[in-house]
Length: 316
Ligand SMILES: [Zn+2]
Image (spheres, rainbow, N blue to C red):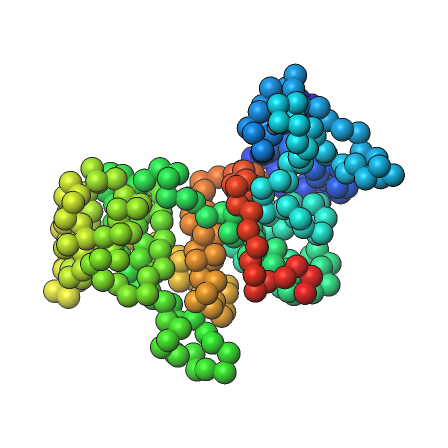
């Protein structure tokens, strides 16, 4: 493996990304370093034996692209971008790296800002990039369930639909937040906050050994039945806390969330809300890290996230 291209992720700044990875060759080498920290891995058969993977020399005349490898185990060829959100993209990789940094670091990673800074030519292309990055940031449930004391609460956002008023009800979305005290968060969009939906969300994201703390919304009683403990705070009776039975963590999170999502994305449509939530989750879960670390941690999630966001065509 070649020498690391940067000292440490902590020290990574936007300026460094823009200057050091100003060619696609350098950007590709850096992406390889992030996605393959122990050397190339064949995405077709998972072969990682360095003696059985060969790097092919780029040759435009023979149509051998930069960063192409051949696997000795399955005989197939691959690049580091196979199976990632970068696959098949015509947008230069060096621009993708800057976009990652902007989305992961900034508190206002808007598509408009991205379009201007990267000279993308169209807002649509910028939106395509930010949505793909947000998709990659989503934590699959199997990344470790929440444990310890988990506070659960619900809020809603008014998504805006063109031509409809600000408070058009059909586009309103409920968001249930599960926050580990002193730890991570998982957000889930819910059409209706019912005990059945709450139960499914808790089962997916929280260990059964956890102690659940909620308000007195009736749906939680059944939903939290299978967990080690369930305690409730009665907000209606102005009882906000009894010792450590409180929902202060999740309420603090929601106030950050409201400022972050609603302040930044003036019109979040319900369809794309889960993508914004993924970005917000990632930022919250890496809140003690530097912008550089947060960006590198995000890029590591790019693997296995290939998708086509159908309504968003690149460059359209
Ligand atoms: Zn292979």
